[in-house]
Length: 149
Image (tube, rainbow, N blue to C red; front, side, top):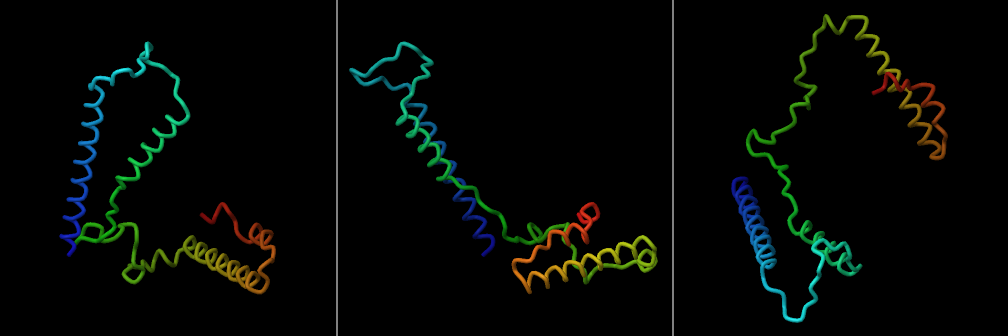
């Protein structure tokens, strides 16, 4: 199932590339076609004049081309590929060093986190009681923005 999904996305990508290549080839080949009889010939090769309708037509064509070829999202998990972020840790499998946990700096940080938690809980209770409560002063007073990152 996962392999067939992967293969179908690859086939879709190859088809899109083939269509894009065909369109680019046809567009460049039409540049060498002779102009129809009686068409207006410009004497300046790099004329900067363009009508509003020409601009809108070209902009719409460019947008339609970009919209026609969306990129594929590879969010599925195929074995070890995409199996999870290396930055995400499971707290149940963490190894706690008891010696480091007992140090003064770690205990100071833990107490700081607990004070922030109690401040946030009190602000949450205030907002739950009155949805229009002004908690800005208590945020500035109780939460140190330098320490909370």
